Image (cartoon, rainbow, N blue to C red; front, side):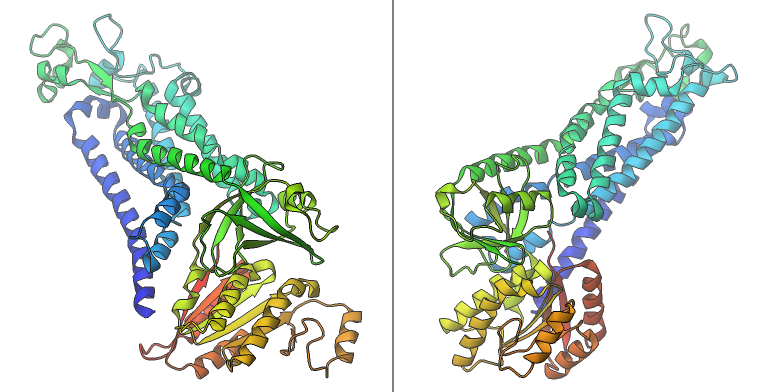
Length: 567
């Protein structure tokens, strides 16, 4: 377990360092080339070092735009994983985990785009100032090129009184640059956690502005505003000699007037491969969308949770995985992630959906949530299911001791894991996992209703198999009213818990994580313990801190390894 954890962390760090290294290499290499290349010597006379800054950041921007599309093609990779024998076990999970540097690449695009924009604004100002009456010498000579029919211009701004804003709004580079900037700002701002929670639809639809972003990026360089000396002109016009004889360019045979042209746009070459992959991904998604999903059972729980049981041809899953669900009658574009709550051993797959937004509310209404508990499948709206996709929680079975912590509806991925444990114990399957600690923190007592049956069956089975010690679960209720408190007090001496019906009594309040981790470290002094969490960020930070605090510095001591569920 420790070896795989080190491999996992090392590959993740190596991936980030490799990305940073390639960015630095591309930037420095391109910067040096534009600072030294003779074909751009005259261009540097006007623009100075801002030319190299603009071009180096453009190359890094193209590189990151290539990478940003790769994680989007997860369906293609998922399809390859499912049909290839080379991506099994740990490597299969590793492939899922290391596709999550999407945000890191987005920050790389933001940084390089900012440098590129600032550098080009400086370039435009340099171009404009070179046309002023104060310009003299070689700078003035270069700025005036292009006024006769046999000359090509170097300076795209032809007069000193030209407004740079006008240039931005009337050139291909200016207009596409403005569109690229606005599209990226929309994508980044709508991707914040606050926007995703308040309006997932806004995030989802705005994210598809990336199509406009990449189209504009591909044609951004077509205007060829930044120009260099042509290879043919360099053969006739030796720049190192002729730059000092600019006054005799038209008359001298040794120094004919230099000719200039813009560099061919190259952004499309960077993104062509990922765009092809993305197109294949869309085809696979459409193919999966067309596959029939049979809804076998619908249950509307009083706690505002909709339970769906489904079947799909050739659907194979692992505990802790999630699927993307689309309901065409609600939206043809929106796909929402939901953790699978069924076990691989069951002949169906299920999800539990809590009403948390417009889409989930519309879905629950479409399935009659709150009314009739069950419906016939023929009368239900059509669903499309894509996946399953892997998460960190699939590693629960690879630790001798696992700690599962859930908050609220975050219990859904652990339902699948606990069910899988139940089936493995029932079939007497040998497990590496010897102890499971399960913590569930919830505010609403009604939320325990749909999950209590599973815990009760697990509790009964473990007792029958003589493995009562295998699963240690702790349920915490953090919110209750006065009537509930009185009811709890009256039935405190009952054999089973008044809320869950389990032998293990419910705790009231929040867990003391220092006490819990200290106790686990004492009970398992030389073990590797995996801590798996699904819930809010504040609690995630607390658990991560506890893992660091109670992990021993001695390699032979106890070590806590933290894993967080995220989509």
